[in-house]
Each structure stands twice: as C-alpha cells, then as structure tokens.
Image 1 (cartoon, rainbow, N blue to C red):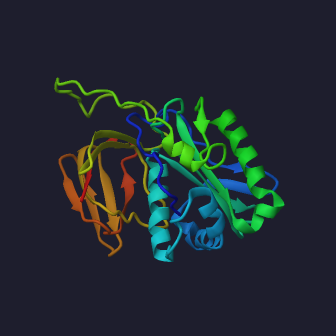
Image 2 (tube, rainbow, N blue to C red):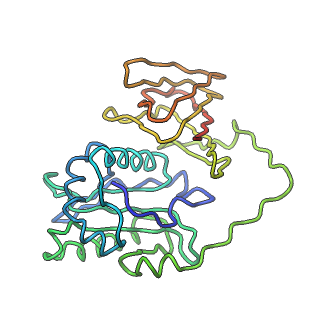
Length: 285
C-alpha cells in the first residue's frame, strides 16, 4: 500500500546505522505491527479502499482513488524491498488473530529542518469510533522513543497538518566538492551483517547506483521483486543466485553482470554464507 508522497526517501546518508536492529513487531492487547509484505495485499487493499474518506481527510484528495489490487501489490512489493534495504520501514497494523488489517505505519527519512524522521500512520475508518487511531498513535510514539534511534521524529497528518509539513523548510544539502571522490568498494565492510547493507553511491533523476553487501541473505520465499525501473547488477566479490518467475536461475560470481528489465519478476534466492557478496546495482529508466 502506498501513500501520498511527502519528502521521505530523500536521505543523503544511511537512514539508520548498519548495526541497528530494526524492531520486528509492536504488540498491544488489541493490535500488532509487523513488516508490510506482498502477502498482505488482499487484506490491505480491503482496509485502504474502505477507508478512502478518512485517508482523504488526512492527506487530501488523490490516493487511494482508483487504486487497483494489482497496483496495490506493486506498492507493497516496493515497501517490502525498501524495508529490506533499510531505506524506509512500512508496518501493517493487524488484528491479533491476523484476520484484518487495521491500519499502517510508515517510517521515512526526511529533509525537513529540525527532524530526523517522518512517521505517518492511519487506522481503518471502521475503527475510528472505537478510538483505534488514538490508541495506535500513543503506542507508536512510545515505541519510537523506546526502540528507535531518532531524536526528533515528526508525525505529519497527526501532530502537524500535511499542509504545514509541506511548507516546513527543507535542509540545505551539502555542496559537493569539485575534487573527485575516490572510494574502494571492497573496503569498509562491517564485521556484522544482521541484514543486507545498501549504500547509495550516485543518485540523480536519471539513475541510482548503490553498493549492496550480502552474507547468506536472500529474498522471502513468497513473492517476487517487480520493479518499475531497469536494473543492472555486477558482483565484485562473493557469489549469488537469482531466480526468475519463468523458472530460470542465474548463478553469479566475481566479474559477472546482469541486466534485469523493468517488471521482470525476480529475486535473490542465495548468497554465499561464508563470505561477503559485494554488488553494484544501477537502477534506471
């Protein structure tokens, strides 16, 4: 499930420290937060489409107008991939018996001055009268303070209106030096890799190039990556195996590169558990 864009996803540095362990769940006597995945698509779609009026009250007209189940699946795949890359974190809010989606919580980087994260949340429209959103907001604020490294997260749409938030001043990005910046992609590898490490090397409107470090990591068994952009990957060190929806597989080692066109469904099914696999990935139209 997507939401109206703000200024999230605009961090020029790692959103959270590579050593930080991302919280897996938050649970109360009424609901549970856990990572939003493609497996939630049907229940998520039902919660979103029956909560249009409330979502418009928060973010204004637009999303989720005309949202289809297929588009929702694509959005959920994007959120799941962003979570795995540690670039943003989307949590579904579910009933304790997993029977219904009750809302969502999204944690994004920010460029806004005075803040170090943007946190958005909503509860489904049918639960508003019972105080669900108020209860969720209180629990999330306590969770952010206790479990996350942020010093001053903002809650647009909750503590500040979306209009005021959009008007809030952005941080000025640091000027780039005219000196060429040299970087050895096989150095500065963390000793511990509890999750895959994603590091942006170059980012423009036309292309995004990143270094990825894996060690025994692989994609979830269910679902596929379905990307809007083309991707070119190069293995510098280690070994990996990719699978495609058509049943084919590709094994990659040092020096091997591969172009994956937009919307070719694929996933990483194995990376060497004994040594780091260092990739370079370029995403482009």
